[in-house]
Length: 298
Image (cartoon, rainbow, N blue to C red; front, side, top):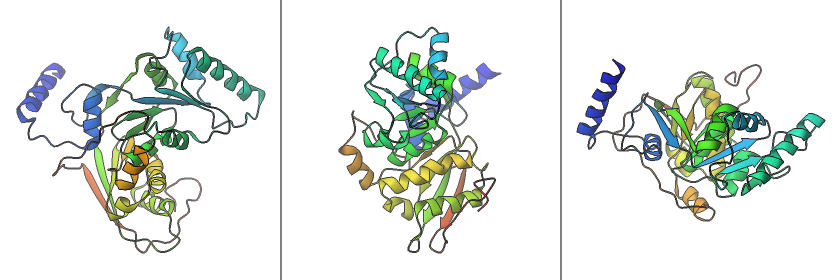
């Protein structure tokens, strides 16, 4: 049944390829997996453009060795960032840093952000390692942040990351894509964090589990890079697998000055149908704060 289903899907894709509507996220997954089209629920094996390991995940190195890994697949596409234990508060965490430094040196990693360099999501963006159309995978759930620049960012655990470090690839299930449209002009003093907390309070912490969120609307279109990063960072607090914003001119200008390699923008096809759409006018929202014990209790 599964083989027949897949064969039927392939025939369907080949016949309707000219009409099949795809989202930018789907196009990124398709491009990196060597396909012309992908569909929600499909499992693909895609090349990862950049990977990052923070200092909570020494296990990644152990898993790498358990899988008989010898050298990282590309020393220019992997970064270690020491940002969770910075500086190391215990002997155990200092040992973690020591072993990760040794691994980085052994593999001649181009990018190793040691203590005091900054938070992983921030330093990778500032260093030009994040750019539109890329697949970014890191050992941090808030890697959804990188959708702010038109990339597909997602978090994984140590075993999946070890697989990437060895092969440069990982399997992904093509997620449902929902739209969160944000319009309006917020009152003075209302920041992007207020906006996204308000939205989480409406959609709830489990409202987008393993879904991709496309943030659209007039409010998003005018946001600068840092504001976009705040919104996308919090997408995972709704359970999202990834987040996305179509790059505006502010993003393109920012990336142009920093990107370490060429990139290709992807655009969502006209008339693409989201699995769900939510619309918010944030003109009258007030300052927001989440209270224990859940981010959606506002």
